[in-house]
Image (cartoon, rainbow over all chains, first blue to last red; front, side, top):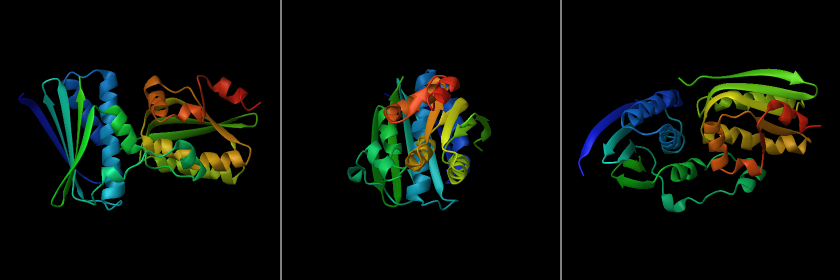
Length: 139
Length: 114
């Protein structure tokens, strides 16, 4: 099935950019014909993925590249986010228990869980120094 | 840039935080600082009125998680009220309603401290 529309945003890794990322996703998901609930899901998933890159892949070092591509293929939105930081091993991820997190005053680890709940399919790829998270959501 | 604002007021012994805007990894430190100050000053009966909150990510939820134990150890609590459905949905996805009082109205949240 051909990809019919594609949009790209290149930003430098900074939480300053999160609002711009969300606007970019909202704008194009709306033009792709997604409903409000789906748009909110995609916005949050992309925010979580980019926040993880800023925090974990680049360890808060600003100025590093994040490349976000949105495409519509048939009835499905494809999201690709690429970074050049430390790679994430999805096999090492375990869903944290909320009560344990509270007891230990921990606060992170839920971005991945949210992404998995919000999107239909999520996969990670690593090629040379580039990491990619690919996510899809059906309309 | 994400916009987020907190306005603080009191209702008897309860501190109400009206929060507005977007709570993400950029703005979470603003709420974090406010909660730290409240804990330091022993104001641990806290209602967060989220009627003006338009967006939250896990970075925002993480602030609630990081301080709730300290507050409960001082016999306090954070109760959350008046969330818009799309914001409540994010709290719900992570199971917050089982560990936090999340209620529809501010009055209901304040009453739970009595």
